[in-house]
Image 1 (cartoon, each protein chain N blue to C red):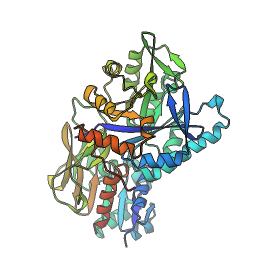
Image 2: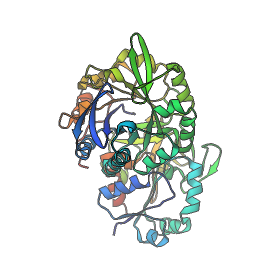
Image 3: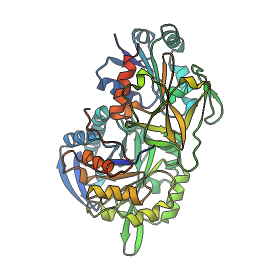
Image 4: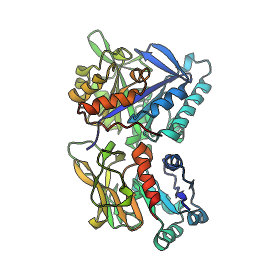
Length: 263
Length: 204
């Protein structure tokens, strides 16, 4: 039987691993290679690397991009698992470059709204399995709105039209990011996930709010998400991914039996 | 001496397959050079993407006569991965009808799912149908990483080693004499993939 997945998200900003809160505040977690290698060894089902460097506010944008690709390259050599890479993807060439550095899938966001032919074009060239659409969701008053550009730009297109369009165009997976819950450790927004997922026929990943292992279990018990993703929760506890997977496996969730890897 | 040659026709994951064999410390190269193929004890054909493009590039880049000599005369173990396995079939119905290498008779056709989405992406386990060295120590608790929409429909079920369930049971490991094929990606399957690679190298 196919298993539900638990994914570790690693945010890299200006070449450094960071922790984020509501897409606004960032805390430096230090040398990415050490942390990244550790996380790679902890039985994650997949890894997602996002370069969240702000092009307009970076001291040396070219250097930070190089550092990011370096990390992806190093990790892909030892991780032996699927690696999704995102951040700053604007062209087919950007995708080719990241695949050459060891990425298996590419996560796109802003370009989904700037170039409406991009998903179809990239899915045709690299296959649907290669293209992951990240949709960033935020509550504003009573409204649930979609943002691009790392949560800064409001998208006026109707959310349900967006979901239909990207699936029709051949995206392989959808990565739902809940900005209000980012870094808050107050659990996933189950109601909102179930509201959006009615429009999703392909595998989707949810992210934002995981504060304890049982939050992952809640996702698998109460939604039909294919994967639960998180970032911060995995950084501060030794062998965190192993412990998370072990908790889920022992509580009867349909996940891979965790193993401590000797990679 | 054990030496792996990964045949290269521009498939995207060649480097990942190299990483897999390097991680178990075996001499390995990516090459289509006839001498290198001759010098190697084990041959591997990776694969990602569509059947038709794969076949075209294989014919264009890989010296098939030299490979067939090693595989059919010298009986060197050969491992096809994903599309690299599917091209061993007689034909494929992916976007039309395309001829394969016809090494293990069968047809590649779309997975028959109704409620589950395609492609089949993620971790899934194997159910053994026949004992084989390549599956040594690999039980139903181990999962492998799959990414595909098409399956290998074998004409002769004697060549079936393991199946995997995704609404239907499809062939996930096949074998005819020294030819082996896996539908999943051992190079993306962590410890399970390493186990399978080590088993493959034990085959002589």
